[in-house]
Image (cartoon, rainbow, N blue to C red; front, side):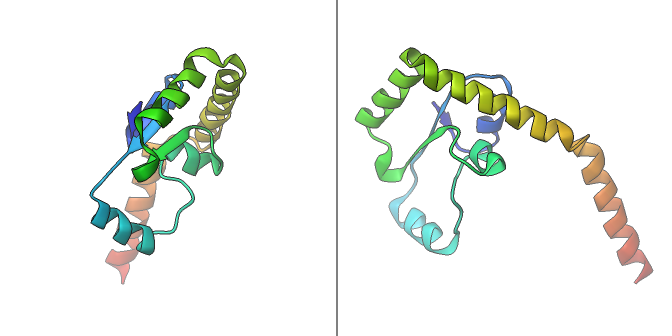
Length: 118
């Protein structure tokens, strides 16, 4: 069980099957749901643009759903094999992008240079 955030991506890169769990203030969640329109909440699913890891969000996060998903991770070899296959694709996708830190630094320097010339 992993909470939403960078921990979901880190867990995937360590090749550990996971269930993403998130439950927040009901009012904040209702407001955010109306403002933000994304298909997924976990970085793994967002990057892959498909459901790789189960997301149990708000009212879907119950004792029963957690038990069901953990049972899949522990006993469903086909499920785990698919998750690990998707994790490999995720890793290769990130790796293909090159050095993220270097790319971010280059983009920042480029923006600052453009602003300085303006």
